[in-house]
Image (cartoon, rainbow, N blue to C red):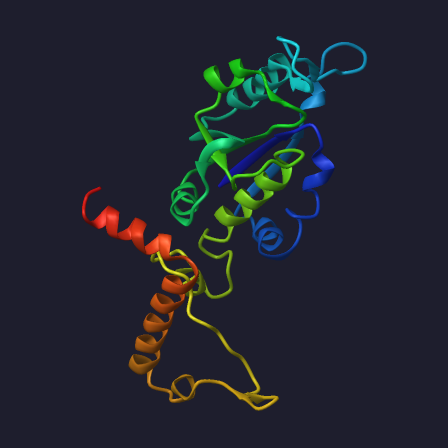
Length: 233
């Protein structure tokens, strides 16, 4: 899989994409991630990538020309399954979206900055917009790193134990059950006996019950959404 990330602040992506699961997946050759500085195609001697907003609103807007030139250069080399813009307007990132994107071959992720990007980029280049939540951050770099991480960890071989991803929160529409490690007792607090029983069926039943209970308590809207989908709403 290849992921190309377009940004005006590439330094913000150095650390998130170089360590832990994503970093190891890159070293193994499971994913090829390239971060591109849009300023390479900036306008004029100062390599300008932004300009004032038509209409008089405050804030600067990323210009269309540098983005189209950089994306066009990449698109001449390969076909992309998705060109994604990280935007608060987009569909909310979910485990289902991460699962879907992990099956793609080539993806471009565009990081907005300043006030946003020229609308013509969104209308004539972007194929999908994704949001990481109902809030605004300084740029799309951190959301892009989050999206990349959610995708890469699902690529076969990225995790030491590939079955681990199957029990993550949201994979089955529920939160995960509580998890414990050694020692079996700490400060008088004990690990539930069922987890020490060695009985896989009892453990699985306990985990399913806990996942359902935790979802009811902490994220009841997930159950409502699941129920709506099953009823065809």
